[in-house]
Amino acid sequence: MSNDYDYHLVETKNIQLIDSHPAFRNFINSLKSPQSKMQYSDILLRYFILPVNKNLSIDEILYKDPKIIEYEIIELLTQMKEERNLSYSTLNVFFYSIAHFYEINV
Image 1 (tube, helix red, strand yellow):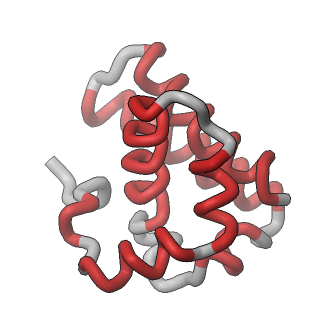
Image 2 (tube, one colour):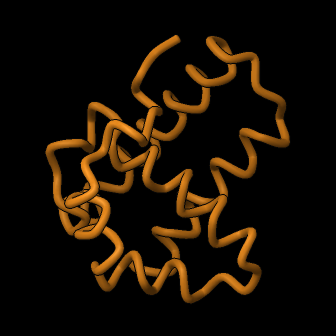
């Protein structure tokens, strides 16, 4: 199993920087349920530490070309489905979490 999605590898300092970023706060504050806030923030942190994003700031991630973002998300979902045999429902939550982050901030 790959460590690409192991958000525990993110240093506490980096998580604090993410938590304090206005785009992340906008994202979290747009969610109503505490459970959604936990689940979606977990998914977003996993997205931030993917190899294609881990050396980028949140602003750089936000303002990537939309076609590149689309390609990366499709590749990620395909990889997750093939390697982890995740259900459509799980993949849908993952997709919606990332899509919502972009919708609320761009």
